Length: 108
Image (cartoon, rainbow, N blue to C red; front, top):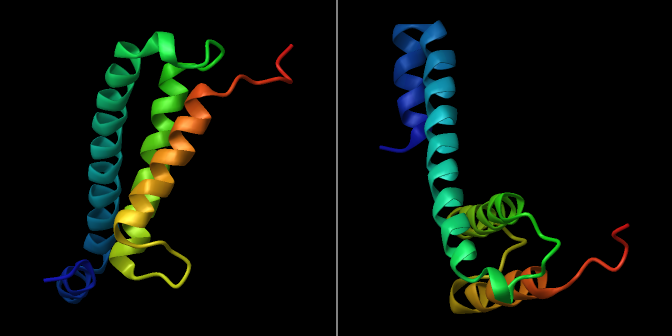
């Protein structure tokens, strides 16, 4: 059953239930994203010497989690502006490595 079907069933029984369902779903998505970002941050900490010194690991982990979540989401949706499969992972790896290893030349 897809999420849209669940919402329609809830809406028929209790229109306000749809709002609770959406809030619940958003909270779960946020919780999963937070857990993934925590895992990414711990992995980045293990490689701190290889990462640009001006990067905050928490910020970097959140950005990487967001990037990967959006790439996966678009692939699942078969969004017209997406890169699929192994090529997507290669491109993400390249972007992440460039981001983690480049030093901000404009930092004060």
